Length: 327
Ligand code: SAM
Ligand code: SF4
Image (cartoon, rainbow, N blue to C red; front, top):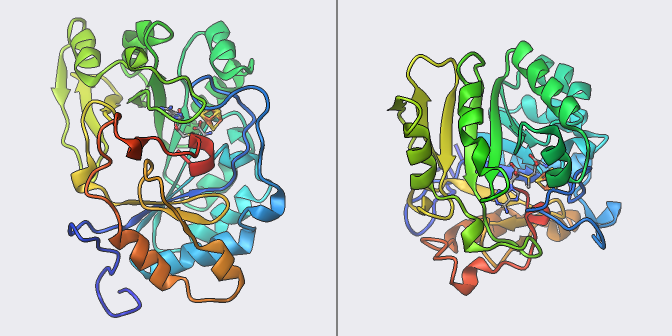
């Protein structure tokens, strides 16, 4: 029950119930993925500007009291924060499904915490199976460690999803190799259409759209459609008889705003009601001033647009990069 007695007061003007919060723990990252941020001249926020451990926990608890049932930790790279295990431990005690998106390079240091606190699923980003290409794409030569950590995640029994951002001419020739991985490994591959953000050199020609991904896979494999949950952003499939699955996240070619249940909290404590909204609501400043931030949360949800519009719309040209919003 929410604070005002309603089952879930986080309902917008279009009757969408918001029960999923993505919390960015930091804008910092130990990788420099080509499609996400430049290698140089990155200005990161000072530590005091970020939500502190107790602030994250208290604000998350408030969201949970308002009806949030799922929290995803993201960033930047969430595991570069030294207090990530403490945050995970505290959030895992709340009545929510807790999950995380990580580049996986520090996962071995946190896996015990994830398992011990009952986290059941994890998204690890891996855009290529080729070590040299990995070093070019992430600007860090860490393929082996990420791949080993994916194996560790599987061995620990975590439902392990692999996020693959497809860039035409860069890694789209590996679509079938990723699907092939699911033959024996219970991995869940999620091909993500390349999205535009500031400083990421987005170009429509680099996007590999859903239909094309599917056609390439169908040319090689016999696939079956799996059912998608009402709020799913992924269209899920399986190759008949394979251990794992694959999905496509069609952010560019097909809007999924109608079923959106997501809210975002940036690492500096700003609430965003959409990844692509160009407005945000500062929760951290009033929270630090001991004000009640509940009305601000309601207003932000209420103000959410019905759709994010098209990529030509100015609404798409958010002035924050992916890392500062939290992917
Ligand atoms: N550092 C973590 C990681 O890479 O998994 C978490 C943050 S990252 C911003 C979250 C997800 O957003 C990753 O799967 C990443 O590949 C994806 N991403 C980043 N920039 C993107 C873009 N321009 N288009 C589509 N996906 C993107
Ligand atoms: Fe870092 Fe993730 Fe962005 Fe890559 S996608 S630079 S790992 S935040």
